[in-house]
Image 1 (cartoon, rainbow, N blue to C red):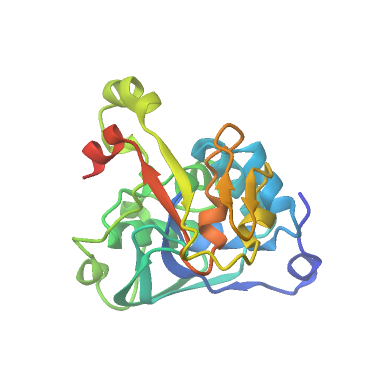
Image 2 (cartoon, rainbow, N blue to C red):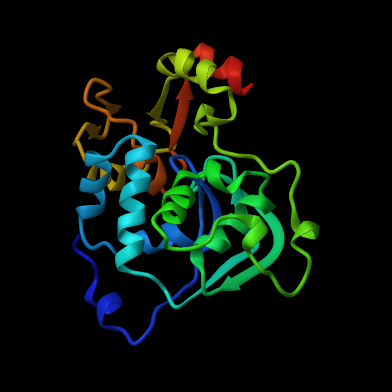
Length: 245
């Protein structure tokens, strides 16, 4: 796993993530922030190797096991909800959360945003790997009462998996759920960031044509994540819209 030597050679690492939603991992905060220590285009290769959330979560856990911060400070003064990490909506949360156990922090972030910690696969895998504590009953907190910061109407990404449905139902309908990125030509500035980020090179950006080859697309949503102009949205099929509203 190619990691930045700045992380590996530092006396200690302090990680300062923003509290945001994420279209693949649902929430991005303490553990996933360390994916930033992966260098160069290897991030895109990781998406190519692991387009499914379960596999991608395992890669996040591997990276975190190699680059664990001594201290994590989550900035949730103004976070992001909806289709994060770049196309969501700003949400004022008035929260700063800090600690030495990044997994425990992510568990508390899940609580604040109305999610069960073990429903976030990155948190679940990191806990099971012994990299931190995700059981809220075993996490000691100090300062203000975390219950006072819970956001009851926090908006999750529309790509949030069907993990909240009974497993039998989920297995039956999961294959029918469809998401795909879509480029709005009127908003697109032809910066080519999405094209560079695409791990399977399925994006065409030209003056009179912006397109995605859906036969090659692996739905990793890297293009959606990197677009600074919100020109890439997530389109859902009819069944998916019925389920998510």
